[in-house]
Amino acid sequence: MTSNQEVSLEFFPPKTEAGRVKLVEQTLPALAPLAPEYCSVTYGAGGSTRETTVGVVDGLQREGQDVAPHLSFGADDEAAMAALLERYREMGISRLVALRGDIPSGMGGGGHLVHANELVDFIRRHSGDHFSIAVAAYPEIHPQAKSYETDIFYLKQKLDAGADKAITQFFFNVDSYFYFLDRCQAAGIEQPIHPGIMPIVNFTNLERFAGSCGAEIPRWIRQRVAGFGDDQESVRKFGIEVVTQICATLQESGAPGVHFYTMNQVEPTLTIAANLGLIDTP
Image (tube, rainbow, N blue to C red):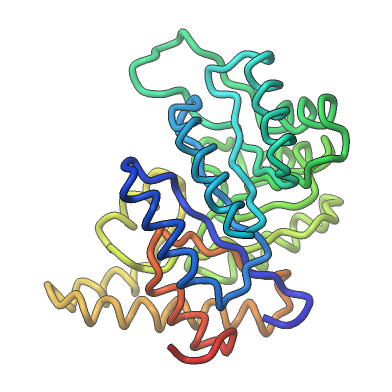
């Protein structure tokens, strides 16, 4: 990207110690040539991966990486959330990604959800301006949204509550992102909205993710992938080509940067970055 466009990376907390070691000691160093502004670490439904997330955050930070933990109330009460904020502050964390989150399966109606704007307000009341806060945005609209307009209204609420920027859900229709920016600007949103980029690694998993989060996979992409059958190498090369072109369009159009959903894999993020001229060809 250009000097004013940042690259950030997202990881999920591995379930095993071997996975955590691999992430910190192999995956992160391999992606270091991208010089990420920060790395975010996801947070399981209702805080189900809290300790694992904190451990990964600590490991990445010890490697000199600026880290932005994901945070959501889920089933936690205010005391538990305040304690976690203080813990992150003591660790030297200065970034957060604030999300509504989900109640873990099996909890029924016993938990409670706190909307992201309320979480942002809670963070600001308890921590002032210590944390830079990012929130989620949906160019193709959140699957639970009543309308396009109400979804933008709720995004503005999150930003007005004190968030500094937004990161989008992944998309493959780049026009949806630019149209979304126009509508956000018309609604009075001035904070930057960073596009989230999902490399095509496992198409079956991608279809499942897309279905649950309201992201559209265009028919032409589905048809092209179907034409490759079991030829996973061709699917991989095609996915890199498609996502590289999306990123190049964003780059040329002045997007504030890109946020790669890495799925804890080095490839194809590294190849896409090399194609864009962000790093030397591996």
